[in-house]
Every structure is written in structure tokens, then in C-alpha cells.
Length: 178
Image (cartoon, rainbow, N blue to C red):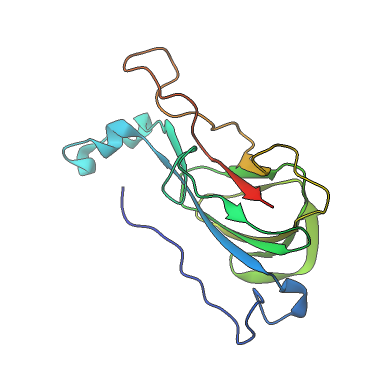
């Protein structure tokens, strides 16, 4: 529990993540990644909650689980700046299917050696900026290019079979729509 969010400081040049022209983008997508343990959230006095028993069962992007996540719209050839902020308690690996990300910064510091990635692990409490160019030709699904948690946090609720039963689907999943 607590309050968290993204504070974005922009450079003097519009359309760039940082002062370098190599960080130019057309569409910006802040992605705050988080998790919820309903028992901790419902504790009458969170100060007395035993954090050793913390067990997240809801996985969110910008405070929402799929199918309620907001998609990212970008046309073929456009560069999408994916601004990851991991507000969760554990490392989170995000994967973009059908596109490559070019990681340009970590913890708000531009990298001197940016690199390409299919999936990238963002440590708890860390940020990462990556640029992905939407390819011409079409997405791997009718929904677009899936951006999801590679650790398969794609469910909502307790998956152990205990009641109440879990919601269908959900979790850290959104799409880049061309």
C-alpha cells in the first residue's frame, strides 16, 4: 500500500527522451508496473501485517489489469518510448512480441552503450526507458503487438484453487496497436 507514480522530467528538446537525438520518439507510453496482495490491502492495520506472508495475486500496468489496460496506439514506422517504472516488490521482466526494444536509459540515466532487447528485467523500484519502432507489415495478433510480463503474471486472484475463485485472465498485458 502507499502512493506511487511516475514523475517525468523532460529535456528542452520536445520529442526526445533525453538531450541526445538518438532518443527521439513519436509516442510516449509511461508504464507503472505493480502488484497487489489482497490480504495486505485489506489488513485493518497494515503496520501489524506480517510482510513475510506477502503474496501478490494481482498484477497491474498503470493500476489496471488486462483487459482493462489502456493500449498504446502507434502507426508503422513510429517510435514508441516505453517508460517502465517498477513500483512492485520484485523484479519484473517485460517482453514485447514481434518488436525489439532499444534500451536507452536506466534509472533516468542515459546509457553510453544502448542495446537491443526482446525482454528486459526491470528491478523493483527501478526505471527503464526503451524505444521500439513499429514495423511495417502487421502485428502478430489482431490486437496488435503484445507487451506482457514474461514471468507470466497474466492472471488475477488466487490461483491455488481456494475460494473465491480467480477472475478469468488479466494481469500485466497490454498491446501496441498499429
